[in-house]
Image (cartoon, rainbow, N blue to C red; front, side, top):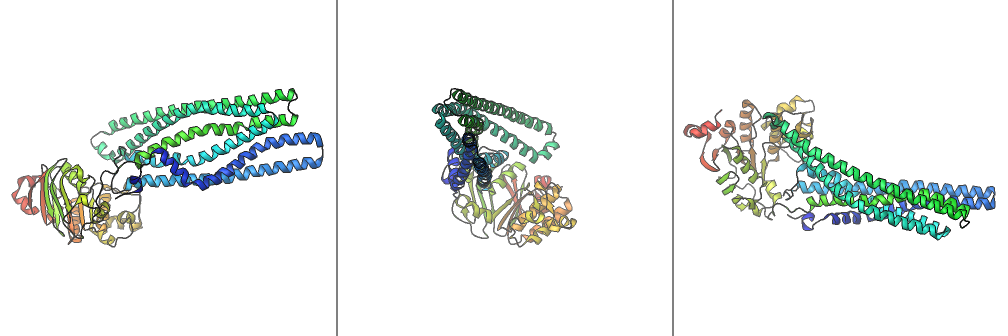
Length: 566
């Protein structure tokens, strides 16, 4: 399987170029409107100076009315160009941020995991904050150009009055930008470090939420909270550092802009006092000196936002350029095929050999939970084939030769801690809305009492992670989803650990009935599921040590009896 991201690397600079290239039209239109806004803002003090000069000479009501009308046109142009210019740029910004969020999410949801050293909380931060800050480049460039237009118009207007005023604006602007460019580099480095620390804190929160109940169970919650407090404090200190750098940057920019404005004002006053410029030109110069602080402030802040956008783009590149953990093959398994594990060594598995024929219901009694988890991970292709010894075959074809999409369609592994999503019971059981066996799956998983308990039935709202459901209800909901998928091969890992013994008996009987004629593997220590299986394979010390029916093993194998009898 190949994707656009795996075909072509995307460093941070490439991500920024892509964002700019995709929004050329919106940026051109936004630049025009914002340039018009800045030109109108600049024209206001120029027009005011001309009006004063003209009024002093003409002293007529008609000239005054024409001047007022000219100012009204300028004000209207400034208002409309700003409103529509920002609307165009912010729409493009929001759309581009959404595109990058979707792209990062696609990388996380692809069947083949990416080889990236980031936790889910960090990827979430990248998909939200970093995507937003990267898309800000779409607003930064037009605002930078429009601010440059304002500075140039002001410099030209002042230069026409006196060349020294124009040169003062140009030289002062270059000096300000040169000074601030040094600070902007530090802001970029500090911001990138802050984003990384905030992401690590987010990942720690995600881990704590997932493991909160086990942590409470063995009293490890305080140690976990101290661990989170540590990474959170580091993120806070880095945020303070970034805020200080930003404060120094903003203060320096404001001070330098004020110095330039004061220099222009004082120089204009000195020239007017010496008779080198007129009163109208003095009014224009003083007005431009006050106005020029806004575009200069905006112009001087742009390098900071460029560095922040680049830092965020580099963090997104960590996800988008990461190679896949494995490269799947192009083949598809035959429908209704069997499942074979041949001499697999991985983790706690030493030399596992087993074969499940098409349509058979087989239970695997793993004495060690670690071995059960390793076996489930291999069958779910969470472990790439090159990471373990031996071969897994589906329909006589090696797993490494099959496409992941085909494997997912053909073989479903339902983990013991299946995720529950915000939505309804129905959308959790049948996310695609295409299953024809939802009623049968609900009945087989004994979820009928949950459905009957609520007036909305299957449309009962479920909170994120199933927060409004009990542990047993969440487990049965996950099992119903697996059964509703109706795949050729279904692997269930401890599907009934959170339900009572009576319900477990009913579920075992219902699953065996519903899956009759379909290949089913249950990795469990549940006596009810073991008894419902056609045969039981005992997984002990990483190898299959026994094979028979549940009842015969109870009668002949003392270790098995001690391990599974309740």
